[in-house]
Amino acid sequence: MPKVHWILPNGERVSDDVNENTNLMDAAQLNGIAGIHGECGGCLSCATCHVYVDDVWLAACPPMGEVETAMLDVVTSPRQSGSRLSCQLIATSALDGIVLHVPE
Ligand code: FES
Image (cartoon, rainbow, N blue to C red; front, top):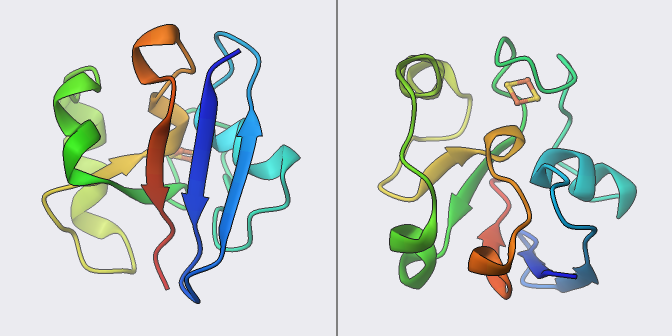
């Protein structure tokens, strides 16, 4: 199972082994990560699952689609180079160890 690390705004780290093919918004909810709400359930219409992918993991992530790119223009926390919608990131061996920073 791929391991995912969330870094909370206060610096606390939460780590979990996530079932393969689970999206990382659902994984965050299962781990009670505050600040990742996933109000639309992962259908790309809310942008409340915004995370900052750690720089060293950006290249391992799949490319963004047009809708995700557009949705990131309306997130409440500032868009940065590592911004992604975590419902669009799927736990796979390629992302084993990924580090996600949770916005304020
Ligand atoms: S959960 Fe709504 S866009 Fe990701």
